[in-house]
Length: 136
Image (tube, rainbow, N blue to C red):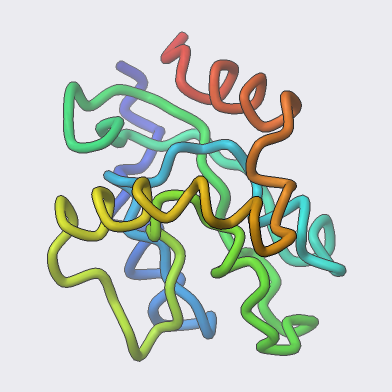
């Protein structure tokens, strides 16, 4: 594994210091729903390679969103609502129980479509999930 690639904890701590949101990367699926739904997506977010396990299993290099330019963020939290796993949270409400957070948010997924949050079920996000988790 390339030693220049940073671990997920470094990205978590960096966002915790400079951004209004944090991502608990071990439960982030990498489908980029947060970037797609954000009105300032490409100005705020960047996808970076990092050493991270997928849902807590088998750490390897995967691509995950990072809030690299938080200044344009308006705090609307639609990116938080879009996160299908619950990994993306306001800084003052971090993930405390990762497994329960993942299960809870997975069970909520069918209801998101019912409430008009259809971007979670798009094929483009399934493709990004596959691409970002290859671990090449």
